[in-house]
Image (cartoon, rainbow, N blue to C red; front, side):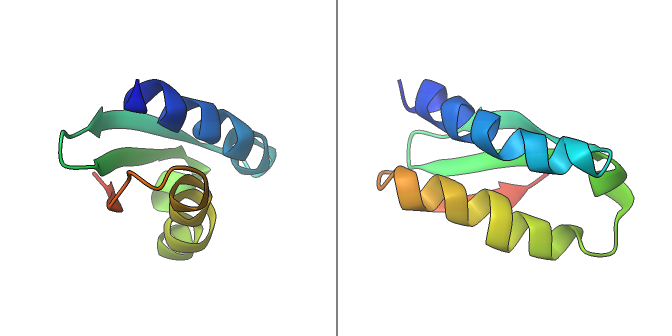
Length: 74
């Protein structure tokens, strides 16, 4: 169920990433609340990808899903 919640939040974030030629892929959600994602397309090689992950993807997930402890890039 947590995985579905995360995917739902990612679907809200995706249009912004896709507008710049990128995307985000859910890799895994661990039992202890760690979400693993992969930035793809233009986001995968962008020098600002760390900022995108921290202030876009991570913030959106953690704001909406309190069970998530951290979001990490793979």
